[in-house]
Image (cartoon, rainbow, N blue to C red; front, side):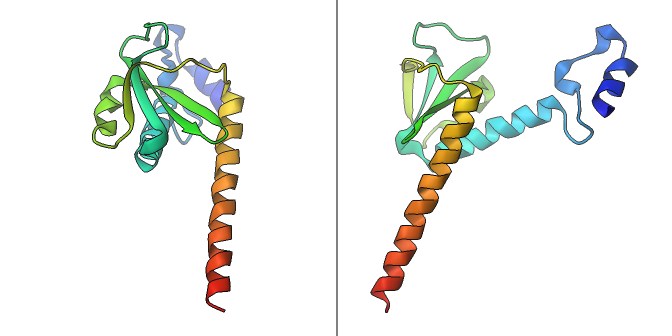
Length: 137
């Protein structure tokens, strides 16, 4: 209801998608959060991360680059604004001219891969804790 009311209150020519809000955050804010969180994830896992100025075929959206993380459950990729390129400097993540071949993953696939990766990491940590407990008994 809030969203619909907000759209109807603005003259059509003044609507800018990035400024649309759910009452808490605008689309622009949410995308900035996503961009920085993905950069943080790359910085946390540089050995399986990469960035590229171009797609596999040499094309790219203006002002953007593509970055990815090759998880055990499949690759997670996002297009990021060029302003975030420097945030990945000196991390150990690979810098490529062209991105690897896209595997056709969808947004839903990325969510599933992220969740599965989290569950794998949780299982590995539990195993380490259990092994430590066994050694200390």
